[in-house]
Image (cartoon, rainbow over all chains, first blue to last red; front, top):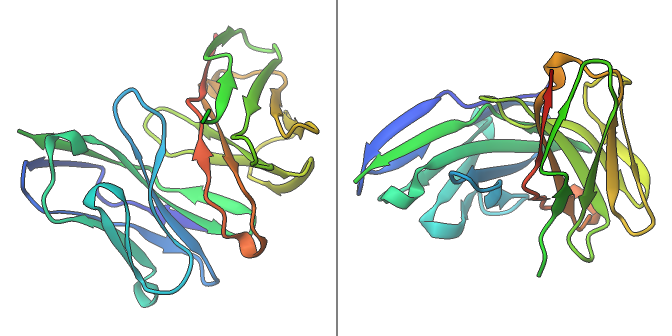
Length: 111
Length: 115
């Protein structure tokens, strides 16, 4: 069965540090890839998405992600995090009419 | 513009009861999906409906059912509630495009507690 793995369950960084959150999936066919963010007390919001084309995609708030097909990965990056980036981050894939989410990574940014 | 709306926001039920959750999609969106999010986990896909037809179904028992109305709003029904059904139920709407390149927008969820 398809699955999405987020290996970092909880990440703590200081402001201005660089961020990379891992996301790997298991599915051999065509996938659409997403990163969602859930800020404290808010609902899930789309950060960025990949359907096709340039494997390096840029999203909102300075986030970007790179799709590496050979590694089945879609890691999320940000060069310099801010306290306001404290949130839960979810990686998700779409295969046909099915959607799969990872278990999430909780990011805490210390001022 | 109004986003995805869900009602009620919170609900408490007892084991064996039935519950109906409601979702209104973003104007112009014809596809609605339902997810269950247990505390500490990511959302688990339950159903997707498009133009009132079921397009996708996750690995949930038949106690879970849904439907979509002509105005594209949707209801999720859960029968014979179990303690393990306690979760946040999320609705997401999307403007479905051919080839499956859709972006889902999530509502705030309905938090269900089964006692």
